[in-house]
Amino acid sequence: MKLLYCLKCQGVVRLIKSSRSCECGNAEGLYTDNVNAIYSEKEVDTVIPFGIANNQFKESMVARSTNVKSYNPRLVFESWVMAKDVKVFKKVKMNVKG
Ligand SMILES: [Zn+2]
Image 1: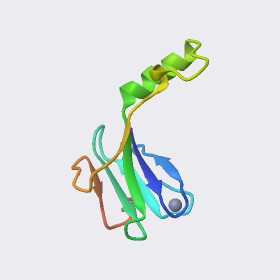
Image 2: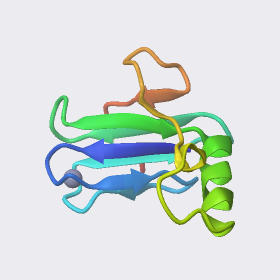
Image 3: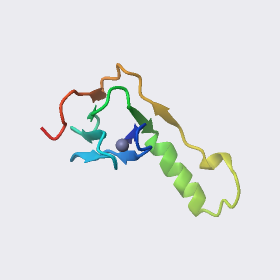
Image 4: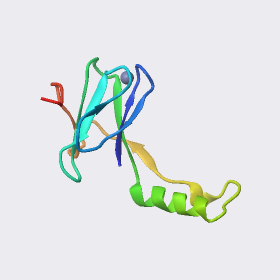
């Protein structure tokens, strides 16, 4: 899953196939198909695109639902900040709503 983190309002936006933006309106993005996404920022270098490993996240939720009552490695999932040249999550200059 692809998300945006806005440094201005500390908002996190989970992207979907229609445009979404953070609370302050600085970060905006959407999926253009099942894999690729685009985003924009009103202020330069104020939006951090990042991802969550879907399968690991799902496994963590399953672990929680199966009575894991305290910290357990099964609850851990991976997330990462996207490199600036990642082809599946591109920054665009214009408002992504077009
Ligand atoms: Zn914001």
